[in-house]
Figure 1: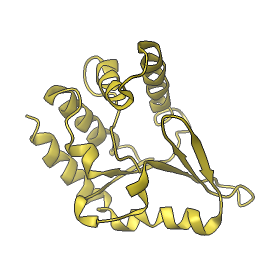
Figure 2: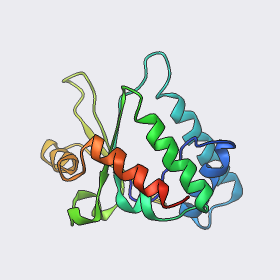
Figure 3: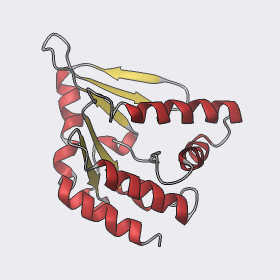
Figure 4: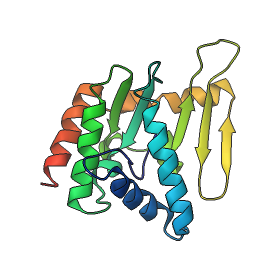
Length: 169
């Protein structure tokens, strides 16, 4: 669940959109820290298109789509990138509209890491500026997974993102 910013490849200078998003999110981080985080995010994107790509399923809070970060050109580019990656068979994007009300992501962004081996249980990962938290108890992980049911389905989400992108024209 991402509720703040999206950092994608976009068109043109891919690091420009990333830096705008990361810099805005970190507010007071040093230029070196912003650069390091941008580099990490850009490298992670390559995992989606490698020979054996990772399966990526994200639920984005509507605020991610609506809140302007980096100006209209950056937003348009970021949203186009989201639309483009939904064409990949290993990528699923859902949007959680404001109308969904209170949900597990209300308290902050999180990631559910799912593993193919039964011996490796799923884990919820949460982080903020100063601390990281791993949640492993099965009932807690299940609650976070319910967020997918509150979100728009992938086709509705694609249309939603496309409509939002047109607002930045």
